[in-house]
Length: 261
Ligand code: ADP
Image 1: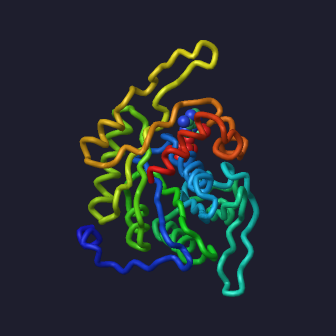
Image 2: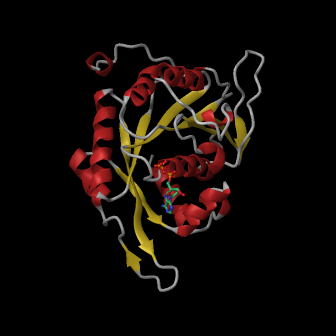
């Protein structure tokens, strides 16, 4: 690992991709994939001249197919690379397009690496300004090998304001620093719940833990995303909030994060 930290292994850029932004979290279930998808759409909404792609590197639990309402098997291009599936103007690639969605995937270490290798190297992205990568949760070998394989412009770390999630987020931030990937900042997800009936605000997971952590680590605080039923419902429908309710405060929150990145 120390060798990796010194940046010895060769990083090869992905052909046609200008900047890779990875979205990471210390643990699962904090809203990493939801953020990755809405960040990708937010980058496009903020500047329609930009082309944005989404790579689902969470091979254990791919969620991009559902979130982006895509399914099917990618076709091969003339140079034998996989052509991403596209929705809402965003080309996407996911392990979910390559495996049966009900059959369990029993991954062995080497299989995981070759799957990641395939997703990183055998996709024909065309030309992209940004490739947003939904990372697997945590800070293990898979995350490290992704950071070793491709040059990464920066990492966005998603956390809830809860202590336990913050601890893991901190670990994530330290990992990126160690491998010389710039941490673009922290997104605080599920920061506040506003009752749709009475508008009362409740900080279910605490109020500003991620903001404080950003201060402690000396990284940028990229913004707050509220805990809101619209975000959950639109995600479940495969119509992310930035696309389906562009004028909502929730969509604005994601676009704000996209402009801070
Ligand atoms: P992770 O990728 O970190 O495992 P997901 O993005 O899959 O997390 O989110 C976990 C669940 O929480 C999903 O059902 C998602 O719709 C929901 N969710 C994520 N962020 C929010 C939010 N801000 N408000 C409401 N629901 C959310």
